[in-house]
Image (cartoon, rainbow, N blue to C red; front, side):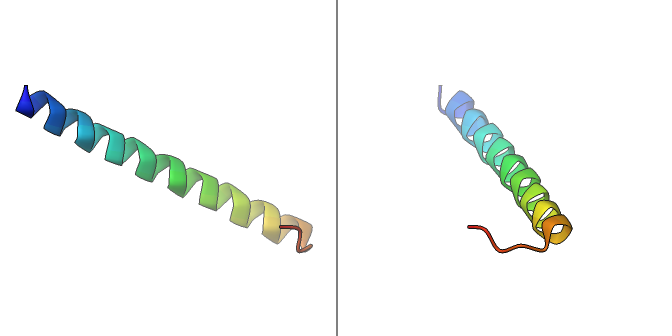
Length: 39
């Protein structure tokens, strides 16, 4: 059971890291293309 929890936690961390990287890249691309500061 502990091994499954550890693997699940690592998968969650990897998925969160990939999502954060994708969102940040999209936000930076949108900000660079619009040249407007809207937050």
